[in-house]
Amino acid sequence: MPRVIKLTALGPHTFSNLQPPGISRPPIPSTEHRLDVVSTRDTAKRFRVALSFAGEKRDFVAQAAAIRAARFVEAAILYDKYHEAEFALRDLGLYLPDLYHDQSDLVIIVVCRDYQQKGMV
Image (cartoon, rainbow, N blue to C red; front, side, top):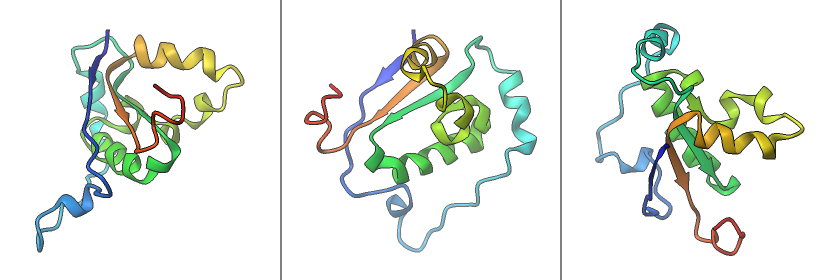
């Protein structure tokens, strides 16, 4: 079963403004040479990280996905922009639970201030 980590919201902060002033983050390396990371991992699951989020958090999650993809490769991150064909399936609602529960090592749920009112709890 995937590990679930509850994250505390940081408000309007994003990864870019969590950097100390005057220090820039190094560029994210190309993922072309990172295919070995996925093939040599010690898990049988398809995804290393799965991201679940409300639409208004897309910018924040896009940054988080890019950071994870730099470490593992896009194919190992369950994020809709990296797997657009699968997320376009007609029966996606039936298919998603398996992707998150059975095919992911870690599920990261990004919540927003209105999360409870959206009925996602």
